[in-house]
Amino acid sequence: IDQQYLVNKIHIQYNRATPVFLFAYVLLFGFAVKTIMLCPGIFSPYKRCTFYSSELTEQIRYILVVGVTGGGDEGKGTMIRNTIGMVSGLPPECRCRYTVCNNEEGHRLEMITCWEKFCSVLAAIPTDSGQYENNLRNFTHIWCDETCNMSLKQVGSTVKQLDPNILARLSGRTTLDKVKKVLGWDKRGTKFDRLVDAVEDLSTDLNTNYNKFTPMTPHLDYVRDWIPPDSSSLLRMHF
Image 1 (cartoon, rainbow, N blue to C red):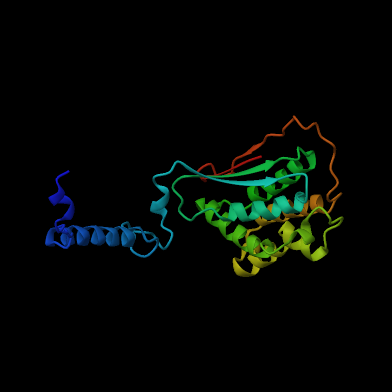
Image 2: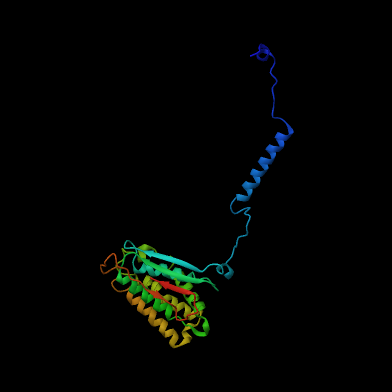
């Protein structure tokens, strides 16, 4: 190496040039824009619905709601409480199939018997003037308000006999009293009598041998389907 290159003054080069500053500014600006655009819920680049519209259900084939019950702390009361809530979630003017599925992992005969009693209550809801879904929705909304706060201490597996007040709310008796006053359903004559009888059958089932189940073969499943009396209804139920 030539000695002059080792001892001469070294010319120091800096990046403090206008093109470098412009490049850095472009990178920072792009990063800032990307951060703002990806910030959730504030500067989202798409429109969000803040309310329900029936148009939201046009592009989907079905809505499936699943309620699971096992052999632990979940029995007939828990299943009925959950199913009431699932059915009451039927959207108004829904344009796709709304399916409620009960997945009973305990393989218990008494559970499907109770489920069928519940379906009988839904089948007894008046279907006059093609208003079955509206009547169903009104009835189950009130029923859901009566049961949504029930805890496992009130309806779970440790309960040997349902409290009379809990039984009246869970079976739909208190709901019947409210639809009489609010909706005037007691003026429907024999149609309302069918609903009263169905509620009484469900109440009897819930009040008989609560949390006492017949031993079942684990690999055997009970499968049932239920279709509303109004075939135009989009509600379907499966067990």
